[in-house]
Image (cartoon, rainbow, N blue to C red):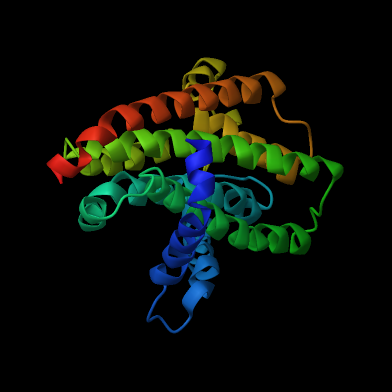
Amino acid sequence: MIKELYNYRQLLKSNVSKEIRGKYKGSILGILWSFVNPLLMTLVYAIVFPFVLKNAQEHYTTFIVIAVLPWTFFTTAISQGTNCILVNGGIIKKVYFPREILPLSIVVSSLINFLISCLIIFIFLIFSGIGFSLYILLLPLIIIIQFTLVLGIVLITSSIDVYIRDLEYIINFFISMLFYATPVLYSMNMFPIKIQNILKLNPMTTIIESYRDVLFYQQVPNVLGLALVAILSIIILILGIKVFKKLEKGFAEEL
């Protein structure tokens, strides 16, 4: 599969480019929306939620922007990736190419948008006075783990969605619910240990907390928790590849 993707690397590259350009095609700000959307979302949360949650977290805006952007990467990639096979059904029936290129293009383009919008995080870290530490060197590792997890999930959901068309609506609902079970707007310290352990069953909890550890708290993240999520992400990716390969045989007929 890797060899085939390498042979079609130019198609993958053009697909990723199309996803990035097409998302903002016709808009005045263009790719600047990669900054504006998460920034506006963060400002709304920063204004409203300190009053709703009575959160006294210092540098709260920086605290949530560090979590909102990775969460946006997660939700955008899965929401758009789930129906990417259905959306490209016409091309699939006419031309042969590795079908994995479609979900991979979505996840890679979402990753690029996330990396661009990370400039917002760095700006907030500078102007809040938090600054940077050597622990920022662990940031690429956390991003790779999240990318692996997201790609595995998208491979599974995009292939199943061809056969069960309601899946994309179920996934969007589930992601909306998962948002409140992920420490994006709040700190884990608000809850007793038992609740924290339940929340940690969600792999995005460990990932979000790891981003905050290396950027906000400037400390080593939970090594054991991150290692377990990394292993889980690899397992999900392998499972995603197997499920995708098995189900892609019937894509043309179902589409």
